[in-house]
Image (cartoon, rainbow, N blue to C red; front, side, top):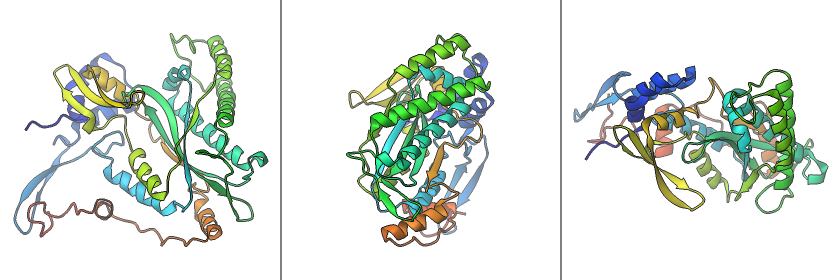
Length: 376
């Protein structure tokens, strides 16, 4: 049986052509080089041996890059266990904040600035609605926001997936449940309008302060005049903030977190075939609700992947309100008291081995052959 092709194989095979003919950022070049080497032996290796049956195997070192499909396992599970500690026995909503297609090229040229703006405006929108008397909640909300920048076919599409508890804590320490109907806290139409107005207001402020790079040869953003013409058109357009079906319970929230938080543009299991010139991969066609495949050149595959590389040290998962790192230590105990539920036991600092045992039920150090002793 032939070895299944991986993203590392694709990067190793076509990476030199990409570097020769295309201009890449420092971060993109770093990702391209590391993913081509991950678990190939070129980053080193070590030999393991069972102290009981003397079975041996070679373990090739991984690159550790957050864009690599081989290297997200333990990081994802560690983050997942930390969030499990914070969840409450309440209803949670799933919202998605996205921007019109006209803005995508501007995002490409201003990734860090506009990704930050997307986070800022999404949270400000939820925060204002949660404190608004007309919404009949008037309490401090919470939110976990996760940045994704891709579609199933790896096309560029920046958007935020947000997990939002169905209520908040007021200044008196009381838990206030949202009065929203169906599957979202507040009116989706009203949220969309507020989000649009905030985003465009801050976008203009960034432009005036010289923090926005215009996009050469782009009909929407190539000059200052075009910038303001496009901005006026975007004011008249309906923006999309949409709600998916609310989570059935805490278990479903945890399952969602486990799938979405450390996801990258494409994983190895979706690679179907790699030839000397092309790559075939499968994707979910959401319009038809079917699984289809796409075949593109190896160079095009890498370029699609690299457009989703994040700026250096950029935080793609953020916590707000009573779930923020700064305030949850005081807010969560108050909320649990108001909900009459016990505080969880103190968090334990787990090793990578303990995390894998707890989340996957298997010991990575145990000999896979005799199952009696550790690999050393």
